[in-house]
Image 1: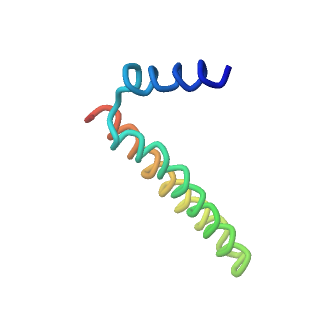
Image 2 (image 1 turned 135 degrees about the vertical axis):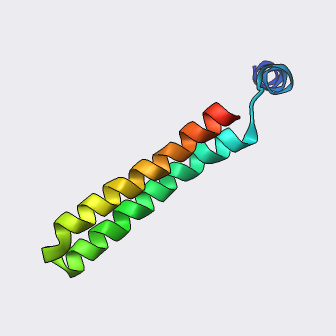
Length: 77
């Protein structure tokens, strides 16, 4: 049974998977970047609650720019 699964996986890897590495890298790195933006935004609001509105606006803009990187990688790739 395991031999059949291993052979099927080998066939998929050798024939079926095609793609571009920069799209995969962008799709994996952007969520990490967005998470870091959110982390730092939460930390900064915790330190200075009066600046919560300004931090929220800046973090949403930064997340939008980070999200755009995936679309650039997909469309330009």
